[in-house]
Structure formats: C-alpha cells, structure tokens
Figure 1 (cartoon, rainbow, N blue to C red):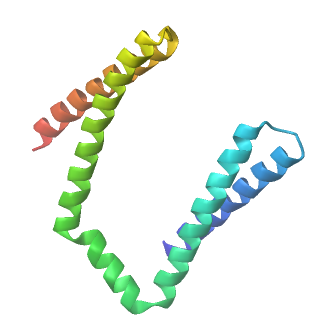
Figure 2 (figure 1 turned 180 degrees about the vertical axis):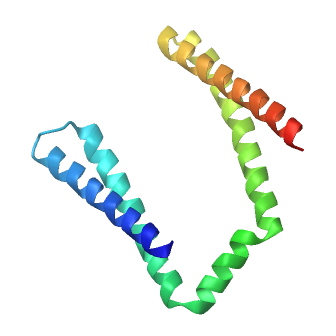
Length: 132
C-alpha cells in the first residue's frame, strides 16, 4: 500500500515535470505549465510526507491518531459545511455584481454554479438521509 502511494506520487511528479518542460519548449500553452507546476509541488510535498511517515515512528503515530480522531472528523465536516455555505453566498453575490457590471456571461456562469451546488447539496442530503 505504501509503495503504491510512493509510485503514484512519483508518476504525478514526472507528469508535472513533463508538462513544465513541454510548456517551456512551447509545445503546450501556459495553462499546462501551471498545471504541471501544481502537480510537481503537490507530489513533492506528498513524497516528503510519505518519507517522514516511514522514517519517524512518533510522527506516524501522531498522524494516524489525527486522521482517525472523531473530533478531527467533526471539524473537517464542519469546515466543508462552512465552505459550502460561503461558496453559495459569495457566488450568489457575484451573480448580482457581474450583472450590474454588464458581464452577463460571468453572471450566468456564477448562477449556474450556485444552482449546481444546491442540486449537489439536495442530492447529498437525500442520499445521506436514506443511509442514516
């Protein structure tokens, strides 16, 4: 399991480096340079974390406790809840702001994002209500 994670992160790191090189050579546009940079940085951080987990027993125990702790599960759940509420409020306000600024395309896109988020909320609520 651990070796699969390491191989996975090494593959992502290689993909990120490849995208950066292709962007520098002008084979792909700058979007892929940013995507490659993101992949490279995240993969490097994950590899460092995996290395630290494998080499430091005290850190591994602390990490595993933090992952399985009920309090942390509750906090993560609440954080996602707050992020969802804030996303809907900010995006709904941006619908109005974009409309007032005369940018109908962005206003419609933001409105679509609010609708999608609300559909996802209700679908999740329905599924969880059936489960619990």
